[in-house]
Image (cartoon, rainbow over all chains, first blue to last red; front, top):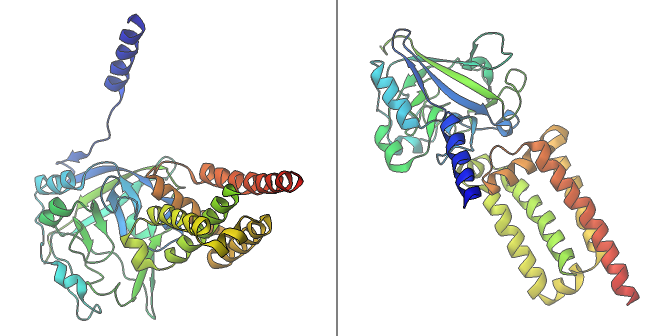
Length: 212
Length: 130
């Protein structure tokens, strides 16, 4: 009985000492810091997900796994005063090419990464390789797409998608829906820039300027 | 030689999972680790209940054939860098343990492949003697 009591005390002490990862919202700087880690699989394979919640449906399909919920991230962006686009619907995802597709709207955000030994902030653009069929890569144009209802209903866990998407909180207006269906572009993590599989990374999301 | 059948099922299950992984649309939508475990089960059951397969697949020569063919074809499909990551990532996804390191999973897979093959040889020779 005494041993059981001691064991319970130890478990309680350990749980009190354990700091669960959490979002950091800095309203003065207009930035959110998301704790995440690298998924080495997508340093060598294509994906459309840059950052997804580890417990979400796409948690294991993303270059970076976020350790906090995408719903908290959505709320944090609202708290910073960002306005969601909410203009992409699931029907838009069926577009056969980017010409038929729709580009994400919403306030512009910029995403940077830091990790131990990163030598400062690394723009997400540098951490992602995009291969364009018969063309040149386009810089990321990240927007607060919103998509809160979809996220609540389906829990895909999508924080940042690399194309315009009906599921992600932040998505890339540079590639309208249909671009991936038509294989116009493919994305993967940049193994020459990002640290190895499992490395903890801080993802810094900053509001830039409102969408035009 | 039930273990030999399980060994073959695991190797060919991984080969088929790697083949499915090559389809990005599919890979983005399903947990290929679950598919791997389902394939191992189906292939094992097929070797136990389908008579021609049952006779053939208990033989260590088939295990050797599976080992050589699956290793070479996976390596040709994925290349040297990806072959160290993709099979391990499929297994990791199926186990739902995203924090397991690729090196640990590869060590376990290499141990299973090598010790499994030695065990099959050892058991088959013991079986033949008796």
